Image (cartoon, rainbow, N blue to C red):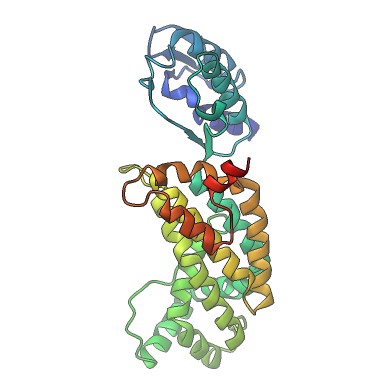
Length: 319
C-alpha cells in the first residue's frame, strides 16, 4: 500500500510534463527520459523526483523553453503537500530573473475542483445523519430482486413517470451523494409507499427529514455544476473562477443563515474550510475577471458589495 501511494505521488508530480516515464521489469527498474536532452535518470517509486527537478531547472530555460516569456501565468496544482516544495523551487528560480508579478505571491493557485471537494466533504460530515437514511433505503431496494420488484410496483401504483434508476453513492465522492439524493427525492412517495407495504423496510426518512434532504440537494446542485465546470479541459477556466467561487461563498453564507440548525452547522463547517484555502481568492482570482472585457472591475465591486467585503482596489489604496 505504501509503495502504491508513493507511485501515485510520482505520477502526479509536475516533472512528468517534461520527462517520459520508462517502465522496467519491476517498479524499482523504472527510469525517466528528459524530453529536451534525452538524459535518463532513475525514477523508481522509492527515489522520489528530486533528481528530476534539479535537472529540469538546469536543462530548461524557464522563459524560452517553456514559452512563458512576457506572459502572466499561474500554476494550478492539487493540495498535496509535496507540491509546495516544487512551487517554491520554481518561484525562487523565476525570482532570480525578475519575471514574477507581485514577487510570485500568487503563482500557486490551488485546484478549484479539489478545494471544492474538501469544502463539501467537510459539510457532509455534519449532515451525515440526514443522508444515512437515504443511503440505507437505496441499499435496501437494491439488495434483492424481490425488493426491486416491490419498489417498481410502488412506483407503478403511484403512477410516477420518472424513468431514472435508483443510484447508490460512493461515500468518498460527494457528487455521487448529490446524485443519489436528487434521485431519491423523485421517488420520495415511492419510498413512503414501500414503508407501508414492506414491514422489513425500516429506514424510510420522516417528512421532516425529506424536507432537510430537499434543502441539502438544492444546496449541492450549483456546487455540482461548478465542479463539472472547473474540471473542464477543452476551454479556459481561469476567467470563470472568481464568479464561481463568489457563488460558492454566497451559498455557504446563505446556508449559515438557514433556520434548520443542522444545515446552518453544515454551512459553518464549510466556511471554515473555505477560509482555509480560499481566503485570498478575492485578490488572485479577480485578476482574470478584470482583464475580461465583459466584466472589468464593476463585477468585482458588485460581488464584494454582496458579501460586504472591501474591493481589491480599496485594499491596495489603503495599504
